[in-house]
Image (cartoon, rainbow, N blue to C red; front, side):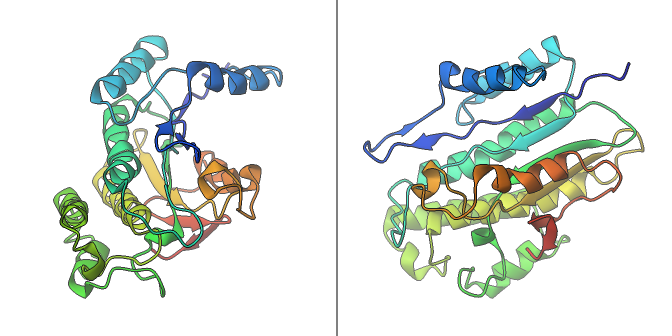
Length: 270
């Protein structure tokens, strides 16, 4: 009997529009999904995780190792966005970047050592956004030199990505970000997803030399404008359709695809 597929899906925090504070899924809320899936005959478990807390990430990794010995699939889905419609506030930029980028990076780096060897390879799927594209026509970095460095795998580095987001946050604090050449739409969210996309490509490069049987494939995808709390329920795509490409990437066992960006099951440009 084949070993069960062990996957980790990071739960998304929800912004309550009636409150200035964001709310994390509780254990009671998360339990609704496992119960529903158990009715379908699926074995589901869950564990608390705060992606902003290094101790919480460590505890999750320890629990996974002790309970299952490792994982096969990691879906980085936790994210926040405090803007709706034409809003473009950066009041919560620190939290947006910390959750969307550093949360993805820190959880990935903590769980990669636990990804189990297999003939088809382990999978990491980062939920991202077209708003974070390097060369988007209407929403991109104006700094051509920085764009080129981020686009070139020879110059792309974790230090470069971290320096970019740190510069953005410093300019937000100083009140000078509007003249910094940053994306003009949902600026803090766009910068955070630009960093996620760059991190995905960087990790694909760093993991590419792993031997057969120990491969890890990492990709990112844009689910589209999904009708969820993050869009104020104004999206035009159902949650099920938004998740489709992510599930497809997580279970794509017959192709060694890594370091790519997808939408609607098609590769798109970074």
